[in-house]
Amino acid sequence: MKPGELQKAAGLPAAVKFQRDNQKNALQEKTSTAILLPENYKGKGDALDRGNYRGLKLTEQVMKVLERIVDSLIRQVVSIDESQFGFVPGRGTTDAIFVVRQLQEKYLAANKRLYMAFVDLEKAFDRVPRKVIWWALRKLGVEEWTVRLVQGMYANARSQVRVGDGYSEEFEVKVGVHQGSVLSPLLFIVVLEALSREFRSGVPWEDLYADDLVIIAESLEECVSRLLTWKEGMEEKGLRVNARKTKIMICGNNLDLLQNSGEFPCAVCCTGVGSNSIFCKGCKKWVHKKCSGLKRLTKDSDFKCSRCQGTARPIDGRPQSEVQVGSDKLDVVASFCYLGDMLSAAGGCDLATTTRVKTAWKKFKELLPVLLSRHLSYKTRGHVYSTCVRSAMLHASETWPLTKPNLQRLQRNDRAMIRQICNVKPEDVATTRSNELLTLLGLEDLNLILKERRLRWYGHVERSSGAIKTALDMQVTGSRGKGRPRMTWKQVTERDRKDWKLSTTDPHDRNTWRSGVRSAMRAASQLPGRGSADVDVAPVPAR
Image (cartoon, rainbow, N blue to C red):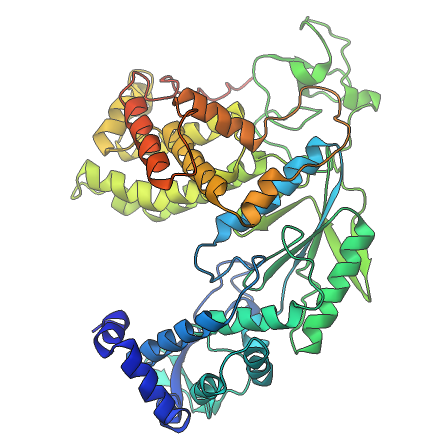
């Protein structure tokens, strides 16, 4: 029987009465010994570094039921601040990413800089002292009998490490919350809630997802000051900030790090060039027409790009490479992967789409035996592809203000994977229509899915009264720079509403809005071209 079924069968009142009667002693034997799996890789960092592994603790099913009951009891009493997006019903990673992206978008549009500190806690779940957990629960108003129940779950906690078919000797665990426990995430965010109430600024300037903290400020001095305040507050309660993994990002126009892409990177912007380019005599590289400063391309053998003339923006736009914070020196980065979404110091979603495409190809190659299996129908393979590969490609896409090159990058790689699933040979690519392959696999066009996700998220933001709505409505004054301004996320969604004739539909009515989006999606999928250009974007030919 599953934990949820056990909880339902037992009934919450009966379970609570059992806990009140037994409080602490009855649980000690149940929680005395647990099995620890040491192979749990965090999924990021060097896989050969043992510091990137966390032990996963296996507990009995009955204990999971009791933990769920205690979890619900604590949540009824404790109020978690809206700056915490992790392990709180109704909030998630998309909320936190959206808040950070909206602040960055608005400040860059006003030609202002924004300073972000991405704080990493060293083995946060394993290091939090047990006494701090009891202190936090009592400070937030949890009843004493409930606190003793939690203490009973951790009293005399012992573990064994499973290695292959054998087990190590038992050892006592006196610090940290249990990795893999149902109750542990709540206990941890309760600790952060209790210790930060006196000094935090709140959303949108401080955003938490469990132990992932980002501090946002309008000046470097303010950012460093608040980072030191958080550092002192957490270290006072036994948590430790990992200075090696804590990063500073200075956001502003042209403050990113240009990276070469394509077979022939442009000498000025470093992105791959096509046929509409000119050769530079000085650096012997090709240059986009838009980067050349020429109104019309000519066969000018004496052309020199702005990079050779010394007028182009620097390759590394970071104002500085390090920031002194107390006794530590923190690295200044041009990009940072925040909750799976790649943020660039220069804003936009170019780097995010590129990173998501790489992640999708990695997932695709892992699932290649399944996706190419002739024992599965095309519909089944399409479902696996949509669930496992496309979902990885479109993580946080609701928050992206997509441009045409961004969309083409996503579509080009999406169609390349679909052709491989359908075993389309290279010589048949030109004569094979993408719509036929999508129908064969039971998939919708990627552009339609992106629009649907954006519009559904737009409705969610409009109905919200929390941090995401505050970030969207924030006004930042400043002088706009030269040139055409970037499309904002709100402008992109307004264009989507107009394209799908949803301008008169009220997003505040959830059922009406979602029904309208679904109907518009079905109508768009039946049109010729399925909402996007039907011709595949060809790769840049070699010179």
